[in-house]
Amino acid sequence: MSQLDDDDERSTEVLIQASLEGDEDDERAWAAIRALHRRASRDVLDAAIRLLGAPSAKARGRGADILGQLGAGGPVFSEERGEALVALLRRETEPAVLLSVGVALGHLQEPRALPELIRLANHLSADARYGAAYGLAGLDAPEAVATLIRLSADEDRDVRDWATFGLGSLMEDVDTPQLRDALAARLGDEDKEIVGEALVGLAARKDPRAVEPVRAALLGSQVTVYALEAAASLGDPEFYPLLLAIRDSPAPADSYFLSVLDDVISQFEQGE
Image 1 (tube, rainbow, N blue to C red):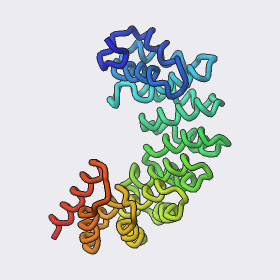
Image 2: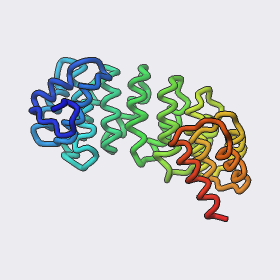
Image 3: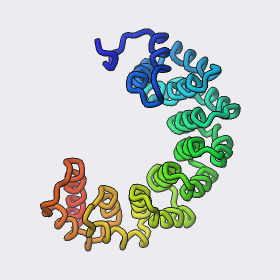
Image 4: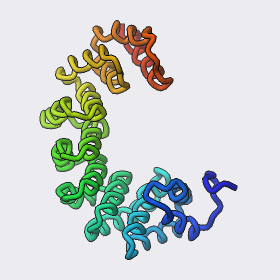
């Protein structure tokens, strides 16, 4: 049996050891972590919590990686996982571990972590601030929104990107002038992905500042899925002929882009 199979039969001990091998992005290590997520048993929980107390920063980070998605998205041992991760966040100093803990808490959407994540957002390390942004994006609290607004202007590209995505899409039910202004500010970002995230978030809130940027994006030489999604949210009938022109263009496009384009055009046609 391949070690990458979904029905991995290795013992928890062997999987834990495999998760510690290689570098951060090692695929075999992540295959073991995903197998542990699916197993979601008490012995996996206990083994992961033990890793949080290891002298090795890598082991502590892997413990957080395991706990964050234990149960593969299901509410498994949520109380124990949240308590252990918040406790680690309070004492941890290594930026790489703080990143893993922040991401894990984001998956859990753990409200007990709010004060610690706000504190983490001031860390000198961009990795740690990224962890803060990830953790805060899943929390329904004004303080989380305010901190993400600040992080959306962070000097680090990845921090800005996740904070903007969090404000624009993950917090889609939140709509304040301050949040909209933060998204509008990112329309001038040097990173096109961040611009796209901001455009989607503004359009979802029907902010008129999104209309002209969407029109310009639809007329551009490289139209993105972000522009299509924003056009769908705004629903401006003037976008419809532009979308048809994109569909009829001989320019190459991948199947996902074409699928989204067809869906958006259908939305406009159904609304006529």
